[in-house]
Image (tube, rainbow, N blue to C red; front, side, top):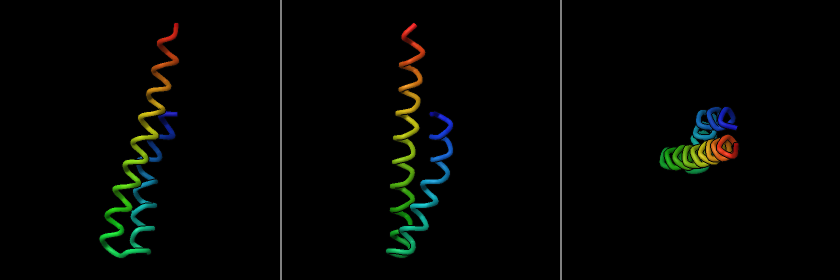
Length: 58
């Protein structure tokens, strides 16, 4: 799961940048990249949390 989060940290901001740029120009590209990064960090954090929770059950 953390590996997926690492990949999403690269992919989602780029997708947000491209989508925001197409829809709203330069300012939309900035906000799209920020939104993509926030979502990617949330997914990464939830994966790390799940990994830590399962390893501490022993």
